[in-house]
Image (cartoon, rainbow, N blue to C red; front, top):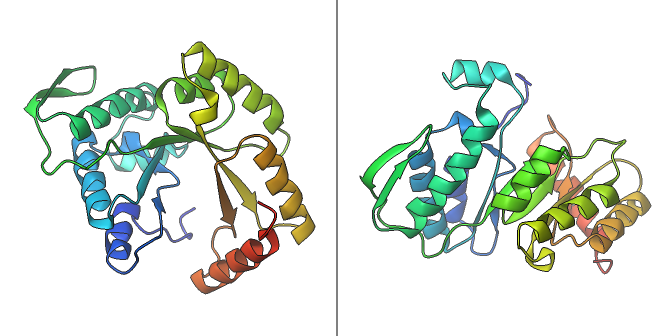
Length: 232
């Protein structure tokens, strides 16, 4: 979408951290395989420290091969690279010195200082294919489902819960960030919110759509929030 403006999220969050006190900052989503893992680890740790622990890092693999080509990144290996990156990020955030040898990373006593006060939560955004759900269940702290209009969220969540149990994890402690788009009437938003709530949603994203000026997006988000007040 060459004509849709996007701010670089970590730069934007570092600015917003200085002018807010309660907002949580969420990347939705950061295309991680396009970026240097140690650099993301440092940048994300810095945003989390500057904001007082208000960053949630949601990552994904993206879909645009042209972006990968322009950044000299490998589109074909993005899924496996993402999985290794998550392992490396968590180690850099929690260990004073990291030595790691993988397919895409070779670290010899590498550190970031200061480290964040906590291991940053890593969420994964993606569809409902089996390999995506297995990656989410194995590696993520939460899931941002990207569902097609024909897909059944009940079926996807049932499969994810089964995979979480298979991975030795408790589905009750797993995060779910559902998205409601600003289409239809307020009654449609309320019905969608209640359905996701019944499926165990812990967070709700109100989406005004792409290519819409920021003031209009904010106005739409406020209307949606008002319509959902008292429902959730």
